[in-house]
Length: 123
Image 1 (cartoon, helix red, strand yellow):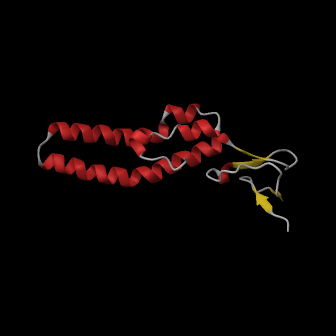
Image 2 (cartoon, one colour; image 1 turned 180 degrees about the vertical axis):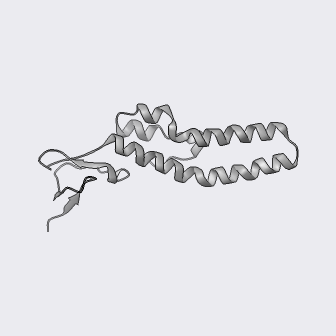
Image 3 (cartoon, helix red, strand yellow; image 1 turned 180 degrees about the horizontal axis):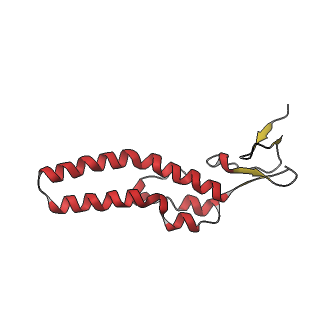
């Protein structure tokens, strides 16, 4: 039985001899010239990575809105300031310099900021 694989550009080939074992960035796979190996397009992987950050931060921002509203009701200036700072970090997460400077998939995975986003899905 032959396994057919399609890369991000729609090219189809029989199962290459070299392919990534990690499927996190499957939609960033590209074939080499003769379709005997698959590599990951780091630029496309960065987009996938940023989308994952946006997915994860949604519920975190909603939870932080609750914290901010409680601080607002209690007129707790320090809690409001802390909440605003945390929300800013969450909003800024997809634009982190570690993401834009990553030139390998390993460096990209290491760019996940667990202090802001929680446990990395790439471990």
